[in-house]
Amino acid sequence: MNKQVNGKWDADHYDSNISYVSRLGKGVVGLLAPKRNERILDLGCGTGDLVQEIVQLGADCMGIDGSEEMIAQARSKYPSLRFAVADGHTFRMEESFDAVFSNAALHWMTEPERVIQSVRLALREHGRFVAEFGGKGNIGAIAQAISEVLGTWGIDADKLNPWYFPAIGTYSAQLEKHGFEVCSMEHYDRPTPLDGGVNGLRYWLDAFAGMFFVNLDPEQREEAYVRCEQLLHTQLFDGERWIADYRRLRFAATVI
Picture 1: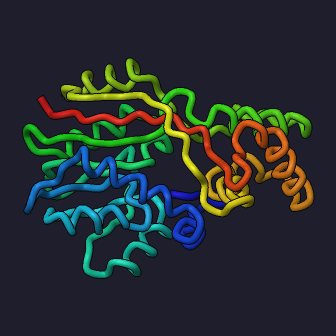
Picture 2: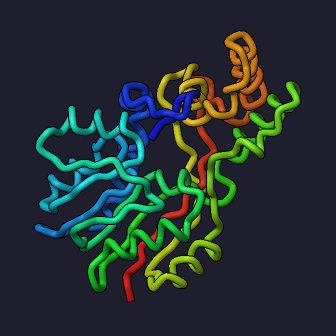
Picture 3: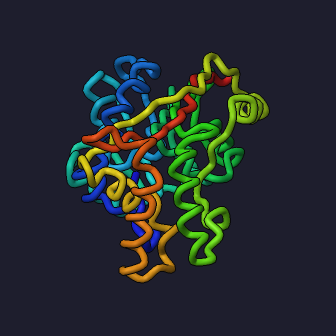
């Protein structure tokens, strides 16, 4: 999923420059282990690549996303598959599912208990919830650089932060509170090469951090990007490409 400055998601930018999100999500599909004819809901499906992946494995998969732009792109790419626009906090499905799957989306949903409640209502008895998203410390260096750069303009980046990056204990407790048994959960470093070579960090900022720079004019925005690159160059640039300092939370849970 990728977000523009105006709060909308730029589906074309995602498919052109941020395709690693879906590519890396295939590992989470492995944890899901979809079975033939299972009914699976992809929560935060983006432009639909992993819905297609799950369908190819024999399951019946539907994708939902809060972005009209992303769902329009998904429908264009995969016209035979099912997609719908729905808020991850409040969605309600007319059918029930064997599993809810989510990749790189839950950290955009800042009221996790409402999300978990919605997932629980969508699942059949003994249904499973399998996901990966940003965990505590995710993009720590990038976030620090953004905060430092914006501070020079008197902008408090913390007040603009759109993400939810929990620790294992926090998220496990929330799942258990709402009727799930946590079967597995890991919190791990996953340094992630960004597409775009020397422009990779800019592509990432365009995709995911536009809300931080919305009050800057184009000249200031360019200056902010350059200064972020300067602050992060030694730590995150390997000479050919940028490596984002991702920390992920990956889990599988089952309805008790």
